[in-house]
Image (tube, rainbow, N blue to C red):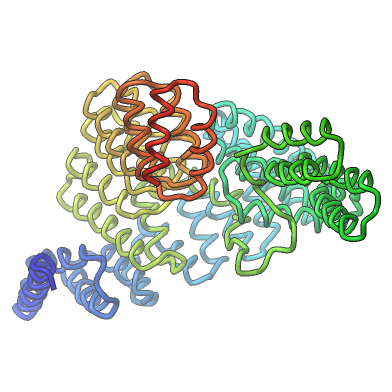
Length: 588
């Protein structure tokens, strides 16, 4: 055991001993402080952590802090004990959350209505399959004043109202109008998101159009939803999601006799068949023109689905046939044009179950509205996580720490102090959950630059494309330290989906430090796209930026980047850049 680990272990042991001694003496305040320190160690094994929590729950009861005791019992799934702490009227939203975790949907819906949380109530009625109540709840939200400047959320309300109402009465004209309105709004909002480069938000809109197409049996909506989802996923290099969406789309196209759509999707299977045909012709010695025609047909189909390495393979084979020298030379020249181009994003055979993405189709038409209703309140967000076993224990524990930190601040009347907000921002970052982004966005919107800085620094743990929405704003912040915090965040945010936002930051910024930080993170992503981008920078830039691109490329460990380096080395006319590319090739 290292000295640091031993020291930490010893301090946990001694803190636990002291905490227990204070309990035995009935010194509840000191005991509470020690147990709070212990449960901040969110990495320890379950039985030890749960023992501490059982003690802490008892201490809060002794201190008459019933709400804090209920948080602890909610984490432990001691539902009766949690409910026993929540008698007061101000705890109605927490009682609703408790009923929801227990899947008592009707009770949860009624309590959410009392708590004036109409979206939560509507979703709970849907889960309870109480459709008349769900329709009434969604209808009540259609003209909600808070949606006037929120076109995306307004579209979701129309969508949910329309679907719920059609379920009750398939011939409802009002329901149909709501669905048409939701489609119009979603198409507009998706376009707006794409214009500003927020592809993941546009993808959400297309997913909902896809759901609309399935529910309404409108193949045009279905096709638009699938095609746009596939396009956005492909741009984000989410290969297995793309495969799944393609497979599902073909299945639906065939089920609904949309044979033209299915035929288009099967083009690449046609290409493979033509290639097999050509191989057979060569084997059986048929006239060479038949082989030539088969390979040209295959090249055409491969090109139609963007499979450029296969196009090159076809032309290489054509150049090797017994044709005239002129024809062979032409085919060889064409093959060279496709050298180094990327492989296709998808293939269409059936997708094995183990590759199916568990959350490929999330019910975002509920999730995003629930987020809107919570309005970035860290208390509400943490309360929604702490009892939910879909989250790993580590995240639930950190959510519990957020709740107790906020409760401590309330006891001290320090909720609005800067230090509290800074501490909450740090804890939200450590949640490492998508749910933390909305509260951090709210904290970033405040006047105090110290809080804004903490919110931005917290993003370095949140590996989601949406994190870059705040980062890009922070890079243009009036406060120099907020801008510095954005550089810290950029340095931490390197994951496959981060490539597009990092490349955008690089292109948009004129600050050499920002551009260098973006290049360093792009280098750590290790994808072919990242390698291609760094080679482009190396060839086009000079000075520090070229050095940063060189350093990033020299650290890349992806064999697929080598052909790209080799190709550019062959065609590079600038001797200095050519030498640099040659050096990189030797290093790899």
